[in-house]
Amino acid sequence: MAARLAVLVAATRTAALKPLASPVVIGGNNGAVTAALYGKLQRMESVFDSGLGRPALVGSERLVRQTDKILWRAYSMASVTPGDVVPKVDFIKFRGLLGSAAPLYFVDSTGFQQAAAQEKGLFDSLPNPFAGGGSKPQKPKKPASGGGLQLPNPFGSTNPLEALLPPNRNENFMGSEPVTKSAPIPAAPETKPGAPDAQLLQALTTAPDGACYVLTSSEGVEACEEALADYPTLKATIIAPATGVSLSSDSDWVSARPQDLEGELVAPVALGDSGEGSLDVQDLAEVAIQASLRLSRDVERRTIRVVSSGGAAATRQNENYFTSLGGENAKKREGDVTSVDWTATFSVLEEDVEVLKSPEETDWAAGTYR
Image (tube, rainbow, N blue to C red; front, side):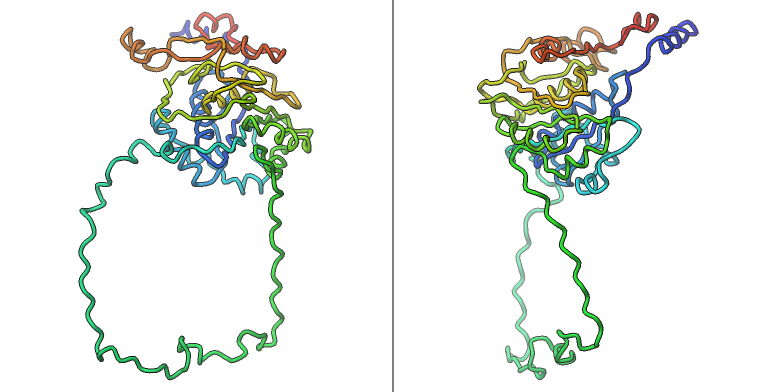
């Protein structure tokens, strides 16, 4: 035991951990993309030396409920942490979330609308045990006394209290100064489809060490670029499907629960300007998160277009809590995880790509796990 502690102390002296970043998922009008981002970030936060803190969620109560339903079904009964939810109006009012860690903003501007049937939770299709056996038959109403005779109102008004009010009640009859109405709050400027609103982008500029990753549709890239042009100090990366590729969501997809940083995809992806078919929102979210982990965050502007096929597939054995403690049967049960070679995938951007790996015991002694 003492020897192992000595190895750990030596490792911490020779290799520094990654600086911590605080992921902030800013939801859109539907829970599909938000759940994909939040679910993946929540799992990666638990990986040693990921450099990620606990994710926060910015959105409405309705969005949180939608996100919770998808997380419960697709991410093994996961849920949004209640204390990490911030209403969007408060986020904008207080100019973003400022803390000790540099924020990583993931903004859903896709406008993706998931089918209503796909938003159902695990137990939504079950009957309600408290609903009862149906409505009881209504008893016939008793006739009113007096044979239905209606007398006239002596006050000459529908409401008897009207006769007790002064005739000039709608005027300033007490001689007091009229109350001045406050000016209406100006409405937020209109934004083009696929672009974040200006008030949100203004709030994101308050964190100079932060980086922003805007997820949009294939048609929304130009609108995003125009919106971001007004905020040159904001370090932003646009992630979108390639031209000709639409967004979709597989309601039957369930995460394999990997506990590493290599990512999990519905299908292998690649980067390119044009393509065809559809791209799952889970894969679009994965590309955005991998870009934040492996590419430089100190970039003024970057656009990444994703195609849904042709990627450098890298299938691996699932490594999680169950495979670590179990034997061969556990490995067979947990199966494989579909991903890609991220170094090869991002190489088309002609940027330095960081290689991530989980620390092995031999790396602790040498301090070479970075």
